[in-house]
Length: 298
Image 1: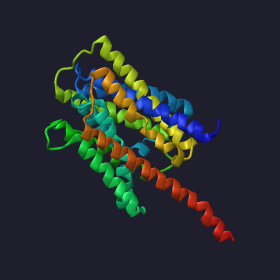
Image 2: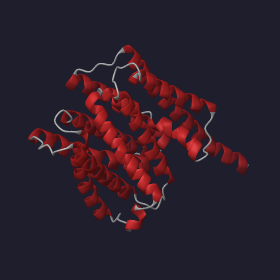
Image 3: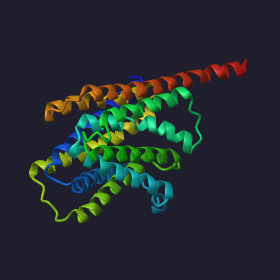
Image 4: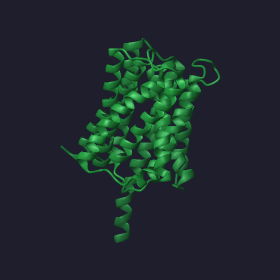
């Protein structure tokens, strides 16, 4: 089995785990507030990841966790998780999943602004197409989803900042430690808001089951995504990140009877097409490097 094939399999597993996590959160949301869901799910994920960190020897001094970039990363991760949990209560699973797929495009734009990375006009056009797709899906101002539409957009902003800060972090910090700190922040953030939400609601056995599995899915999703990014070529494996879109459409129809309208489906198509085009440009730029090196050598 080649490294790229291993990477593709890892992305598919990780993407499936992410969708399962969101679906289970949505299943638990009628019974529990988003803050309590995040606290319970985050605690499960943190315990599991902490054990893996110990086994892998990934722990580092506390000062590493208190660096400004790490604090911003875990803070935005916790905020994104909370806003997604709130949004899933009021929005169809496919809608939320597809909107979050714009994050890689938003990171492309953000990297140009924050890190000065070169982004050509074609990629800017792809980014704008992705944002247009989001507008078609959530229809802000149309009253389709009410304030939940803006919650989804805030979650997308938090995900973008999270990924941008991840890129700017010290590369010597183990990915496992970053993942553990992030889930810990999700749990603590959920606890803080749970106190403000009022009395603790005792979950049913069914809700406990949903959130235990969701926490496990969150761990699997993070670990397999790390494996994928460190195993295969990004230009090869990245298109498979869009596997959650059809999967979430199927889950949404199967469990909640959700069907997107024609305008929203057009938005989904724009986002996926923009993502694939961006990845195509990335693959093309990677392919040019060896040729340039050969010319220089000759």
